[in-house]
Image (cartoon, rainbow, N blue to C red):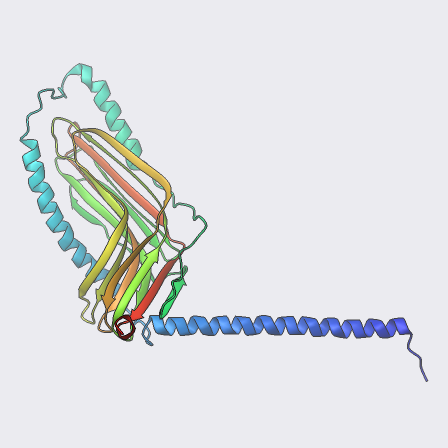
Length: 332
């Protein structure tokens, strides 16, 4: 017969109790993890209408967006061209003599400043605290990177314009445009976006929100009423697209925007800004909705001496939120 010392017996019991507590803790964590995973699966099921986004859909959405933006840009460009023609007819009594030797140095310094600004690249802003909201509703949630899609759309309209854009599903987007010093008509734009898809099971109202951190910078140099344009924006947009890759519904708003076309030397910037926006629109199962944050930059100038322009914007998107209220509940 063997006797076990009391101290050894207590040690064995403590060890078993410790193991039991450890097992229970791991079991509880596994249950919570499993519940979280199931909640995520249910949310994704409801967000996408119980279906998977078809292969190649993102490519069709990009092509449809290019068509839509080309049409929008064409309309806007026509208005700007007509305005520039009228603007050029104005007479400035204090016109700058661009051939005067006394002005050569100053004109070169202005061109050098443009080269410096045109070569600059905006860094992606750092994310601040507070990544949006989850509003009480029938179906709602917050998505974080990686998002469903990210793409860019360049538009070299004419002449010698330096264009650059980037976008990734981790939530970083940027666009820049700068006119060249040579040539009589330099005009181009860049566009980038990042976002997610939403496909409702029934009719209702969709609200999308985001609080990106963004930066922008633009400049224009214009002498003697020479036409010049720097424009751009950072915005939140929703497009509704059908099976034929047609964009049938749109809604959106801007965090910041600019449209500069006056004579003289103009410059403005903002770094690491943060703002919140939400966009709402009626939705239907017949369309898949592209919900995204976008940046846009356009520059138009006639060369130097004459007019130069630059435009750039970048954004970091830490999250995007959505809320869907079915029509039957919205109108009891």
